[in-house]
Length: 373
Ligand code: 8DG
Ligand code: MN
Ligand code: MN
Image (cartoon, rainbow, N blue to C red; front, side):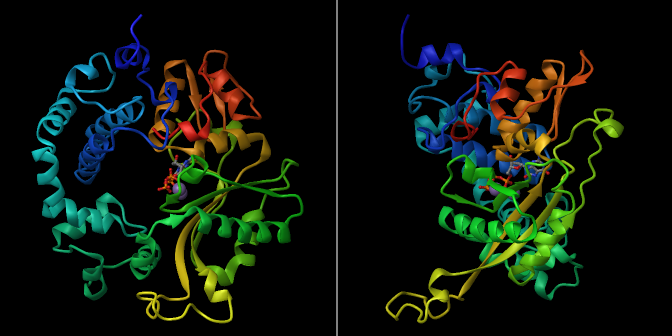
């Protein structure tokens, strides 16, 4: 048998959860282009098209080397006609006219800026765009009503645009740990989301909180939030609304789970701000840099019996999660961040680790660092 791209071609699964997708890959020029088209499709509320572009990009991320010729793509899954046209143009001319036109379009740029505001989705952004709003700054003086989340989003817009570093995520982890320890002895926190997949930066920091004794975690979040009060610029806490027997799987498992959870914005002191003296001049912009930074933090509390499902569900990537659920469905099962239900056996399949869940699903285990689909 031949080795090289064709060997990979023959074995690549069509579901992202069947492949190993590392963080660093060899086709960033192509995937950046396809992901921009995916983003633009989202801005045009065309989800099907968006997912198709994301799937194509994800397949290229899993390749062992850079694509140089169209023939190397033969037999790969998820690469539709449209994607191939874009890829071909980039391989031949270094850029895609469609991508460049989109990138510079007024609609794309305004939607990118407006959906970049915390609390603003595509629907709201589109309404504002139609009303002539192009940038968060336009909202400050406009008549448009903002809800509490959006007001915080506009206020901390410049802060929240700056990626969160791993070091900052770890510092926030220490603070959350202190809060959790103070309100419930023995409670545990786990860093999830992109940082668990090995990313060095992210748009937020995601934590799971649990306690080894089932039930002890109930009502924990309001206490943690009130302990953190002075450090929070914004928070919205939701109660747990998940009732296994009553409403699941009667209701289809959705993206949004029903854990006790908190969407927040942390006020993180910059390291030097804690010291006696700020750094001396000579560092550009040091004078205007405030001594703190606003950082988005998600806190989710899970009973320990659901912990493995929550961990798998919150580690991402989003496409990996989507394909896990689709894979489960195709196997006659239903997966959520709470549980796995076997629709034929009519029973829940228990698991205390991610490895067990992959095994229930008949999938090879993919470690977090290879879930960057
Ligand atoms: P980033 O923050 O570094 O940009 O990327 P990320 O960490 O991968 O994305 P995220 O938006 O913070 O989401 C982390 C994971 O959590 C991702 O797989 C999607 C998932 N997730 C949500 N909301 C919900 C939800 O309501 N329920 C569940 N189960 N998962 C969710 O973002
Ligand atoms: Mn995240
Ligand atoms: Mn998040």
